[in-house]
Length: 339
Image (cartoon, rainbow, N blue to C red):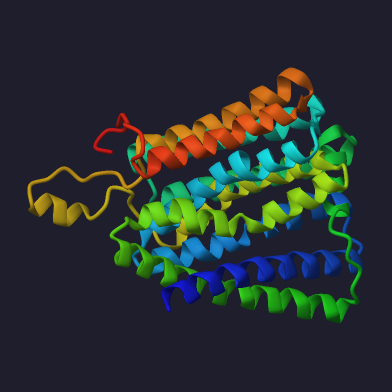
């Protein structure tokens, strides 16, 4: 039954997420909202809704490992799997000016998340800060791009154009609502199945969150990237991945911490009573993979004006090595304090 729950949850998250994005984009077009705004907000945030709902439900059930592992693992998978496969299908042409702003924001957000993991600061103040930074980023991007058309603006508009839907207003609203319901039910099934899988196989919930849940909630980005690559618009996939990673950190972690503050140091009370030092559920390997994936993306993209097939292969190899370290197939060093 747990397999059916997990599989059913993944399918509902994928199709529900797709319906939510398509329905909301169609409604936005009927309301004459610009393609720039649609690409920067609805497309970027829409593909992250599965991660958001999954993390909120996981924290609500006390499965912090799944909630945090979902975000960290999704950002890693977005680059090491999704972007890697897109680059292998067709080399991704990169416009440095389009990458500079949003890529820098992604690197800064990743560094901030690493710091929060290190110091275990996921209270409401951190949540407010992260959500505030997301709002500031969106506001600045929209104002700057509308005043002066730029490469980032063209990229965001292209992201919106990649969602080629034109439903009627009522149909769009119904499809978006159905998608949202599907995402909520799918997240519920996925969290239930993931917790059962972890307990059944004696694997930590964090590992399940970093792998099965993270890859599952990254399926919308994967579908978008593969379609864009086959249409020779893999640059759209790159912009979508960067935007999704920013939303994952600032939006999902921020909203989750704001709604339900949590700790990544396990059960601090129980550990203290037992005389033990609480251990971080996110290891140095996870943080290292998160930082390395973002760093390699920027390095490859900025040095050759494209992501070549061999660079996509390197990214994919990075994920294989990360999985080997996660499942203890290789020796590891733990560099995080108490982690």
